[in-house]
Image 1 (tube, helix red, strand yellow):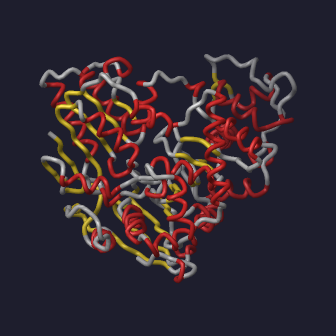
Image 2 (tube, one colour):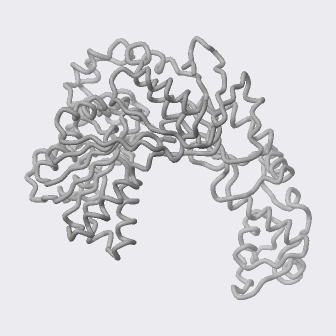
Image 3 (cartoon, one colour):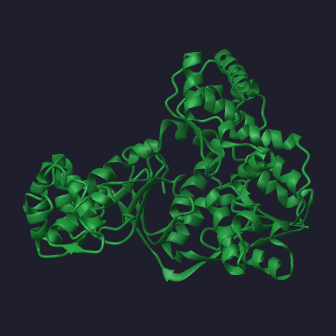
Length: 502
């Protein structure tokens, strides 16, 4: 029996799956008879952790089949990390072939291939799509700026390189799995985030579900935004002709009613090929605002998610945050390290009479440079069970200044110093996770925030995609708009001719 579970944004798809896992375990099905495979490592780990906590299970032993598909193939083939192609191997390959490769690696989270070399990207994309390389090239040559013969030769050279080195990549794992006999039989099989699976992954899923008594396939075709990486949402949609049942979760616990819900529905209804489904928003009415310039956006309060179709469109948002003194994260990196910010806060509290422990003081000593005498910089004279005033450290532990932080701390560049001053003047709270997160829409999939700022600018590549596959961009901006829990803020593009108009 096969069932599709459709989970529109914020409807609790993962929670629904985990509740099913709970129910099957309660009926006596052993955890090792349950396969839970997800597109991302995060989702697979979440399922494993919850089941382990509820039933007192060991994740490694009892829940060995709560994995990504790549991880499952890795395990079944008896692979080791040493046998996998890594960034250094790709760089060596690039040197050997005379092509520049700065970045080339498979994501450990979802197996996506990230590479700055377009030839290698096309080679891998054709493989996960289960297409002949040159046929795939011919179908895309109008938007590719690469040589056909060079592409073929590099593909052959890469095969030979891996063979000589005894190495495999993540795509090899899936291909090898399809050729291998497997003895694993699952009573219940869960496939999560199905909209993001490539045709190669679907072939693997089919092989697994042939030996499963019950299969649940969960996802949301409306949030299928990884077609560029080989995802085949059309295959997912076509499964409606094969399965026994289709269930739609119809209550969103994220999307507010009113204009945000209305706008998101207006976007997604433009998609031609999709499951026919609707969902109810929350009773709370959301707020939709539009701006002609980013300087009009007040992000002084609340948690924000700033989204764009490409990273470089976020530069203006970065500049605004730095001028205003707002703490932000860009491409996974905090605007100022938490370690430095804690050192600054502790220093000023110290100057006002606070007592600090040895770890807090050692952190400060890393930034004050020559304001700590040689021999005291590592805090070896400090005892872990005691706390110290600033005056005590001046007298006995090598500290030779009590000036304000921007005079006492050495090595801070003027831009960073000015930015931190603005943060402190605004009373910006220092947390592990900044309250303003900047990301591409692809990078934020699965995330949410009370307030979302959505930018409409598009790259030339995205415009080209829109011209021959408009559904892809409709889904992308639908995904962006549905990250908002309370407020959606839409920024006008710099060029209306190169934008997705919301």
